[in-house]
Image (cartoon, rainbow, N blue to C red; front, side, top):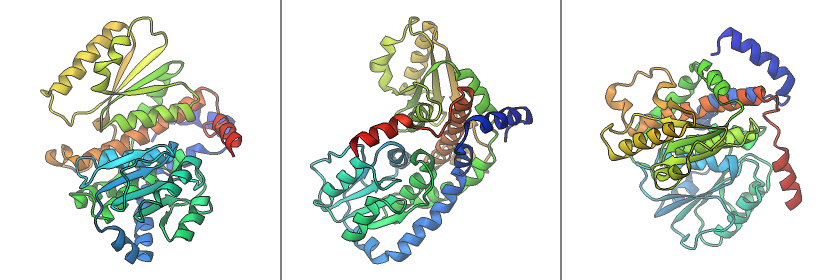
Length: 370
């Protein structure tokens, strides 16, 4: 909830700039995750025999998608990376790896069902494997192809822009991988996933408005931790670009300590660094020490730096100290972080006096290749 004074400001700006009601789309995020349980179960009940056939002898998973759809797969990969039974790879291209074979599960993510690169990848992978499951809304080419080729397609509700359907895409992908027995400790992860909708709806968003004001009129560089908050950094960068119409960049620790850290200097005008901090790893680990050393260099450079502690964004979730440090709790913290930063990008759009739903440049490119 926002304080009344912030709500008054946002309400006035919404009327002027949020013509397609992005506000409502972001509000739907918790409900999307809750609804995904029924969506996945309904698909399984209709396709039980096909699911049982597909689940046998899976040696790898490749998730094909672009843009807002691909982020859902990336989120699933990172939240499950320490619990996966097989490798999970994200493919953001119409070029497919040569190693795909009849033991590879291919998950096709295209919210619209019409994404050129993803449709092209689908037509290529179906020559290699029958283990194909698509996640999309109805009515697109992918819908037609799956029906023709007898491939399972999980229907998610239409009416959103792809980036606004992340709740559906990410949670449905996670539930799908659990269904196929590709995830260890899946009961604990499922339990935490069920906590997410309530946790998101109870979040205090006043800090989101404060962060939006802090980042306004700057070029944000967002740093996360590889294979953890890196997905939040990537998502927030994309949301700033699409919603807020701002240039933004993202990268990850410890990778930046091997290259980018050298390029940070006082001549970097107008940059603001946002470090997505967490406390899941030991403070004595070498990675944590290298991050602290990098932050010292950043502070000496004169570039403003703000730390956002992911663990502090949500409320208390009745988790004891052991569960708070567990792998499953990280899923909850990541969802909270993405939801919180989605609101930051929305408020920045209004502060920039732009329509958060408009994507004219993307639409121009799509018309050129159609």
